[in-house]
Length: 419
Image (cartoon, rainbow, N blue to C red; front, side, top):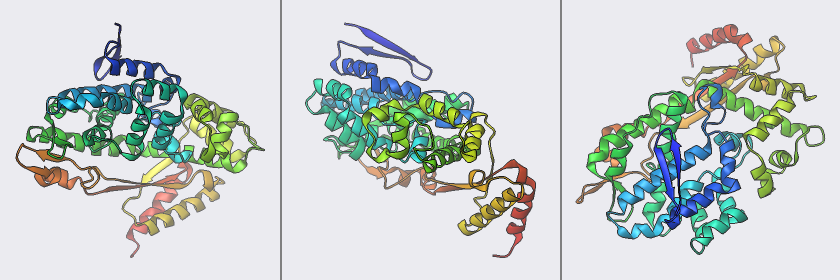
């Protein structure tokens, strides 16, 4: 027997015991090269340019998700002892749920046009190293786990809810972890209360006991605050927009005129048919190296974009959510015109970033309360949760600082202009 302990800033000791088969599987998965790659992918993408402490990795987060999944199922086994038979599937899915993230995490989905869940499923099914480990501990474990992650298919509803729902172990960990690493003090979840309030509804799916309603309300409010203050922070929007422009510009230049190594070439120009080897070869280090090299590209646009990102010479961003889409496009046109006046290329300095965030989806794997007698939707029992259903929309105008004063005057004119 051997044990291994990971000391986590949130969860303290995460200890694995090789004499427990499902934990031995987890140890082997952690040691695999596809999982070790997650050490080289930042949890919050380019948010480190806004929040200097945001340096944690997908590796760290994935360990945290496994830890919370283990705690949750050990608690829920009290209500259904048969759940212990699903630990291999739950542990594998919790640990590997982010295996298919590209460089800079969710940012790569926007800039490279990939889907991390699809790639996670593909890697679980096609990476010889991962598949061999999973299937060693149960026939077709790899397929069962990939089906759960990509299609929410599994024999036990509750296992799905612990991996993908509005109170899953993924969200619980990332809200606490992202709050901790960014220095935002919102993410102080009462995780002990939330887990202890988990129960099983008559249909076999996850439910919350009434004693946990305030802890869950708090969690949902925190999620709303984290989106508004961290994930959709104006400078984070600027950084993501810059990265989009860098990759889009690189793609337009083409493989004959722009240097890129073999894996990056596939990510840029053959991403729909990318090999697993090329996918796994790319991470934050590789992408960062290319952006660094492209500072010296013969393309002035690409060079300027890369220098801005590397040197954190960021563009400005202004919240124009109060405008209609038509007015927002009018403001963008004015920003482009002013940029040209100052001999600044508008294609790489002016843009719009729009986001719609819904803190709670009543019909998208919504939460239920179960008191042993009555099962009801959470929003029916909580006016606070009901209010969180309303979507929060943000619209950011991105522009160069040189035009700021004139642009704001133009916007003021539009504000008072009759519609």
